[in-house]
Amino acid sequence: MSMPVTRRTVLAGAAGAALGLTLPGAAAQADDRHHEVGVGFTLDARTLDGGEQVTSVTLDTRRLGPIDPAGLTPDTFTVHAKATSPLPIAPGDLIFSEYDLDRTVTAARLDRHGNIVLELSHAEGQPGGGTLGYILSKGRNVRLDLVYTITQNTPLARRHGSPLTITRFVQGRLSNPEVDAFTHHVSGSGLKYRLYSPAHSPRHGRRPLILWLHGAGEGASLPDDYYDNETTLRANRGALGFATPQAQRIFSGAYVVAPQSTSYWMEDGPRFAPLIREIVQDLVRRERVDPDRIYVVGCSNGGYMSLEMTVTYPDLFAASVPICGVVEPLGGQGPPLVTDAELAAIRTPTWLVTSLDDDTVPPETNTIHAHDLIRGSLVTLYDHVVWDGYQFPGHWSWIYVARNDPSHHGTHIWQWMARRSR
Image (cartoon, rainbow, N blue to C red; front, side, top):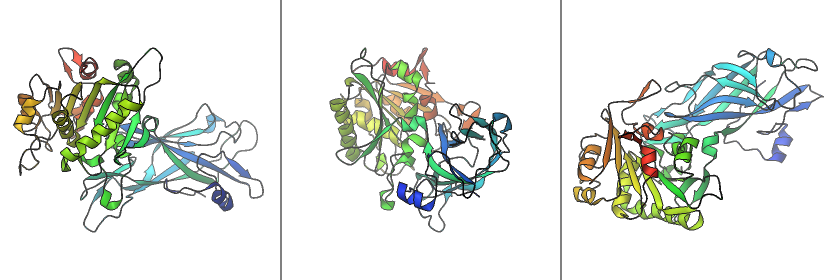
């Protein structure tokens, strides 16, 4: 018997006890009268370059007694996954990446606590493991409602006692340590953001601050009452890259802040600019942020917004990295989002990045045009977006910045940023 529970189902302790359910994350419980054993399980996720995927499932079996690992095989359990939109999909509309399928278990093992970990097949571009869906009409990524159903196929051998069959599985939380390291906040003006804080060290004084501005797909959809403060960290590694141990060493410990737009930055950049600055100024006041080492990095829609921030606040940032940023309106209709005069007036050290096969934001009229006008700016132009042998859409050049790949005369982009001071 298996019991699926969505991650949005939250059972209070009393209600869970009344229903006879094992709460998410609770220790395994045995009902001697009915000879039933129930365990909770966690969905373990990682944010890949192409977005977050559930890569394994951890069963809370540590109190079932010592399990014999020799008896665990990929066939011991079956894992079924169903992912559906949290928002109604209108007739004729499309959402990409919903699924209803069996996940392939590639390995079964015990972790150091005695919990069973079921490793799941996953890879860039592989369907059936993602946590986000893209609603075409809204141009938004949304967190899918995930229902995982675990079925045990063969009894578990134990070092002491008879073989054991788990009869109830209760889904718990989605765990992504990189994402979970960013705390949740709301600014005074109501803009939500996530914050990574570096480890405290008495040897260091004030720390740099890296401001990450997301693309259009990661904004909120307020007409649907959808403002989750999550997709900014789950759709790509843009912000997460700067929180990795490698980046933290290069920056000698840096804060990373990722605000989430209430729509999309290009809707009204001049209105969003002071709301973003408010977050930056608040962090300077209440955290150990060095006001002379604040960096802005953004992709696509956020690439435009990074340019808008350096135009509006020419003395705020030590460096700017617009990635496949929008300068001209998409489709060529209407006035430029950032005028030639504004681009020519930028004095913030700027390094632009794009891929020449970007068919979403044409490089020639956007990134290359901006580079031609921003005095002293650097530019890195890729032919394609390829990482670890997988080719992504040409628009996704933020992957390279999240991996510290762009370089100029032997200096990589994170090192270049870290050396800049206002």
